[in-house]
Length: 258
Image (cartoon, rainbow, N blue to C red; front, side, top):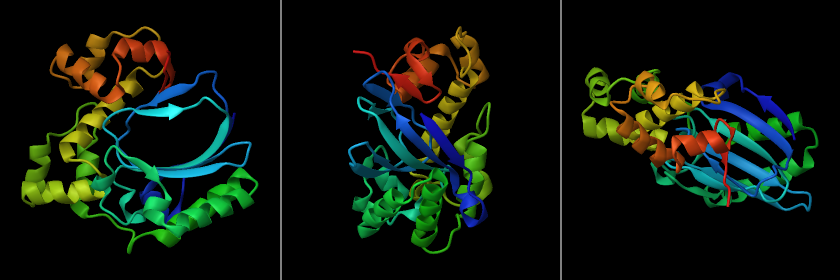
C-alpha cells in the first residue's frame, strides 16, 4: 500500500485535519473495526474493476465495521472536531453514528466529484480535486460559532478535559442553547464529545506499547476507576482493552477475527 497525505492550508486549514490517499490497500484479513475519533469524515473508494463508491460519516460514538476482504484504493477527508458542518446541508448531529452515500447529502455533486477523481491520475492531483470540491461546496461562510470553537478546545484537552458545566459557565449561553449549537456543528453533545476524545487519548497512550498497565493508563487519563474505564472502552471500541491490544492493526483499526 502507498499513501499520500496533505494538510490543507488557507481557509480549509481550520476545518480539515488531513486529506489522504491510500492506494492498493490489501490487508490479510476480511474485516476491521474502526475506532470512533470525534470528527466527521468523507471518503471516495474504488477497486481494480472500476467500481467507485463514496460516503459521508458523522461523528461516531461506537466502532464501525469495515469490509477489507478485497483490495481497494481510497481518498479520504478527515475533518477536525467540529470542522465538517460547513460542507454538508444538514446539522452535523443528524449524521451521528451514520455513514451514508455521499450523493444522499451532496446530490449530483457527489457523482461529479467521483468522475473528476477517477480522471486525475496522481495522488496529488486527486487531493487538489477534493480541495476544490470542498471550497466550492462550503455552506455559506467558513466560520465556527465562537462558543463551539472554544468548547472543542477545552473539552478535548488532555490528559483530562474540562467539565462541561464549567465550560458552559464561561460561555454565557444557557446550557440548553449551548448543547444545541454544539451538537449542530460538532455532531454529538458536549459530554459525548469529551468522552470520545478521552478514549482517543487512551489509544494514543498505548499506541506503541505491547504490554500495558491498564490501571495506570485509566488513572492517567482521568477515569474515576477501572470499572468506569472498562465500560467506556467497550462502549467505544466494541471490544475489551486486552482484545484491542491483541488485534490492533494500527491506533484506530483492529482486526476482526472469526
